[in-house]
Length: 135
Image (cartoon, rainbow, N blue to C red):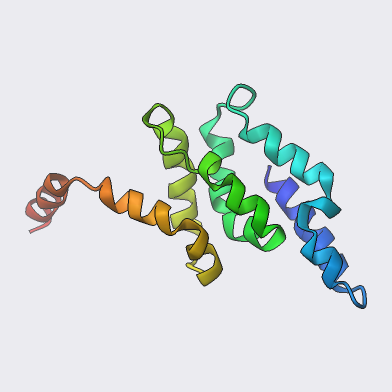
């Protein structure tokens, strides 16, 4: 999955070298349907229930936004599911995202509800226990 994203970024870099390429860049995954197909297939929980694969989406989420902002926006709920039955998948993607990615304005705009949801899930009692244990 890492290679799929790297491949898409390679294609984008090649598009950037083409004069008057704005249209190709704006079409995102429409210009690379093989990438969209693989990404969509691995977001299908019946086909790919692996938290390791889900962590790849989190790790590369800002670059997925760069490659195709519309796809990223439409896929964010599948990448970071809030349904409790998929909490392990959400956690894998979210922890990977938080660990490896800086905060970018355009990505934050897409994920602000994810940030809010994560903050709401924080258990105040665990924070107090952590403070007590580190004092």
